[in-house]
Length: 410
Ligand code: MN
Ligand code: MN
Picture 1 (cartoon, rainbow, N blue to C red):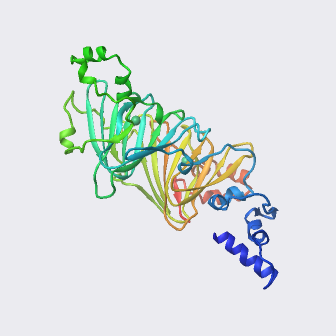
Picture 2 (tube, protein in one colour):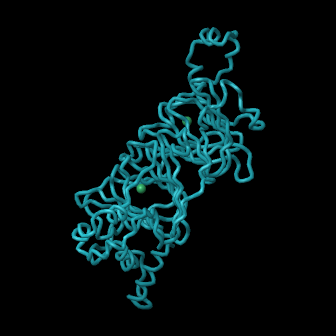
Picture 3 (tube, rainbow, N blue to C red):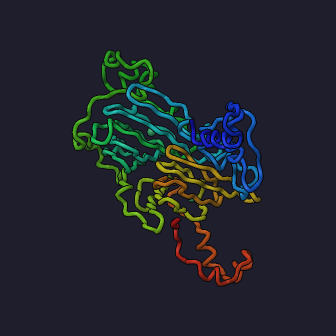
């Protein structure tokens, strides 16, 4: 029994008195009506319900009176994404097909147990990754034959430029059996099922051409897999140094970056790490921020002048209202494993509505991170002018800080 139902039963029992006939239908209205009312508006729901789902999104069920108009959907949970189960791992994606507004970026959540391999492949889109748990070994070779191999642990990133081939393998480690990570691609139409796989190509090349290409007898390729491998158990890798093959030297800008090791901007109410191509030089098309908000903390009212924002919630509970001009605004609740999206230039805030830290990632299809702070804009505009818009005394605007705060405490 959920808390909501239990409170409903208690309320109904009290109203009817002892001995009254209790049926589920009679028990429901008192509390459930309240959940779909705000500021005196609304009514109870008479039809079918999904209480677990409703409880996850209280501000969708009963939006604040400041919400208005038709806004696109800006939320998708990976829990609703199709799970592709493979031998020793899985993958699920949140793309423009799941979240239609997300045209600029797409995401994939993937799990590889120890020694399990995501098959050698490449794709048209650039790939940015955040390691959620465990350790993986990633390798790549660029167009100049320069090489890259690194072990990626929790809070580390990798970035593979568009069209550059790579491999990923889960490693035995103290934290987990292999790893789980988030991938972000710089095109919302990306499909994890449409990457260029090495086995798929070789299987679809005439054997005599393969023989000629590699200078080997045709028999060499007799055991090629008949279908793509995609995710499969592989050989246990040796020490990292052994996998750093020479080639034309290492890639000039490492494809890996230790985001959690970056010193955060510490603020009252939380911390922010901004990682873009100014510090992670290889990451030319994806800029990111990792935000941690204390309970009650607020990622201040702001917008981004450089493009759409793709969010991934790592842990905690958060709430965002997005302002879309023309009096349009809509509020969404998020928790770990959810994706949020903010279309270009739309104003928004994110508030920690839980009792534990809220941690989330913001990604942008841009070489550099940028945002405009509403409070800073107001503090640096003639104060009497700003005061006239808000119908407040000029002294109110005088009191605003001119420093961008990013985060404010609860
Ligand atoms: Mn890839
Ligand atoms: Mn933002």
